Length: 318
Ligand code: HEM
Ligand SMILES: *[C@@H]1O[C@H](CO)[C@@H](O)[C@H](O)[C@H]1NC(C)=O
Ligand SMILES: *[C@@H]1O[C@H](CO)[C@@H](O)[C@H](O)[C@H]1NC(C)=O
Ligand SMILES: *[C@@H]1O[C@H](CO)[C@@H](O)[C@H](O)[C@H]1NC(C)=O
Ligand SMILES: CC(=O)N[C@H]1CO[C@H](CO)[C@@H](O)[C@@H]1O
View 1: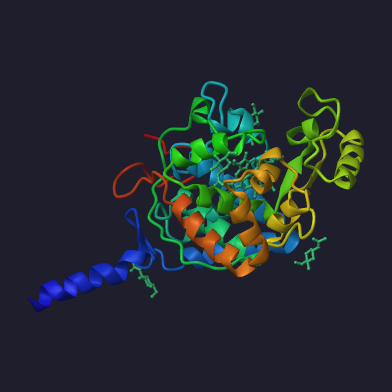
View 2 (view 1 turned 30 degrees about the vertical axis):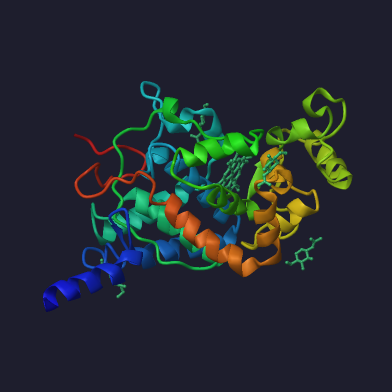
């Protein structure tokens, strides 16, 4: 009787730490330094380039939305065998060198133990915290996938409507609230002109800029984009490298950069979520931690599935 009670108790106490067979501290016994090794690499990079937070968050999203969080995004294309990196939306994913550096240190400390998929997850978490976001315990134990195919890359695009974008999130088991929360990652990072230029002059064939963009921002971005070869600007025009709720405040000021960002403020299914986060930064931070843990557990490989890659850019030789 006692044993049964205790195991019930243990089950409910441990439940929050376990997501889809992942466990907080999965490497406690096999590589106790794993999380601190990754954190050091991220700290070093962040000190010289705080924009790495944007790179890693987007990498984590693109990894998890294509075949689950299995590091399929890290595989290099070869002339004979193109990988996910050869698909259109990959083009500007960045941060691969940081993952390589972490992997190198981890292989030296504990060979063939820590997966590349977990490195992306933990490095993303650490970079969010350095940018001012809330910390959270990230369950680990993901294994690396054996497939990386450009034809699998089917991500939502910046001109999608809210309901179109929602379809790709619900297909992964994520909710409307998760989607609006995760798009809050656009509080950091960079965006190239080609993703929003259509809003600046002849929006949807009207001959005018997108009326949902602040005319002062239209003027600023038109000047920027005309001046270079597909230059970048910040997704959050106020606090561009701080992980905070200013993204949502900018949307309320008609200063969202991507069409999908700005639509979140006007679509009647999401406008309430946007104003809620805009007025409560703590609630956004907490919701983000929950939502990104959910995203990080999508279709993960665990147990003996997949492999632990030795080099994150190539599958292990057979
Ligand atoms: C409907 C869903 C989404 C769409 C259409 C979308 C679209 C885009 C586009 C077009 C860019 C610009 C890329 C560039 O110019 O290099 C971008 C950047 C970015 N996205 Fe998203 N995104 C979505 C969801 C997400 C989610 C869920 C996350 C993470 C949780 C995320 C994180 C980022 C970050 C951090 C950047 C900046 C990248 C950098 O600094 O290099 N996005 N996104
Ligand atoms: C690893 O250690 C941490 C901190 O002591 C603990 O919270 C966690 O449950 C441990 N995880 C495993 C799988 O042993
Ligand atoms: C920019 O962000 C700061 C810090 O959160 C805030 O106090 C300020 O009101 C924001 N400014 C604009 C123009 O949104
Ligand atoms: C949004 O608007 C449509 C019609 O314009 C209405 O049918 C729907 O109930 C509204 N949804 C919410 C959440 O207000
Ligand atoms: C980072 C990376 O590998 N990007 C690739 C994305 O795909 C294009 C082809 O569509 C390649 O040229 C890029 O190198």
